Image (cartoon, rainbow, N blue to C red; front, side):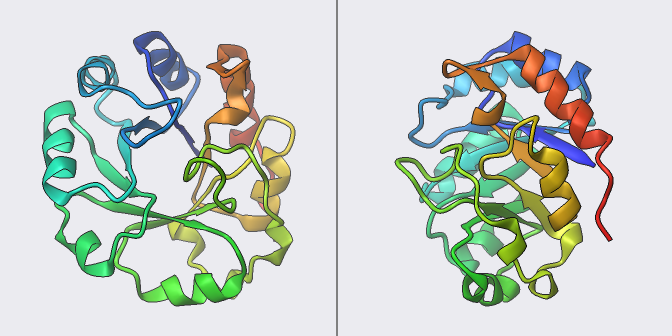
Length: 205
């Protein structure tokens, strides 16, 4: 099971996450308490191994700005968390992760033709689009509507529920942010435990 640790804002945490086995690191460039500056993201990425995916999270950002940030800091993937159109997604130069808030299977069916490399299944929107730490009912997801090899599961995951989530959804990757924090700060012990549990999770049938 692949793991993405999102909302990284400092070199030590990013480096530790990779050391513990993270396959992808997420950087939030949209409004969020975990928003990172271009300069800081560039610094963190310069310390990460080449094989680790570097994902930039954007919400309704201008295409030129996304491309500029991606090139400046060294992103490998672009995560769209807003109302970006299919044409917008197709116009980007890097692989796209399209985030959707799961609010029923109709939205999943409608997304089937959306041009993206991955679909990030997230909880319904809170104050920010993503990173709200709330869980949705994984059993409600109609698995026939999704290509599991393209699914990144997010939304309220933490060390105590990630194995159950993996068993039910069987995604390509799990994505966590607030679930590995203590008092709003990334907790290295929780990151380590989360990655260990995700990597050892039994996959459902």
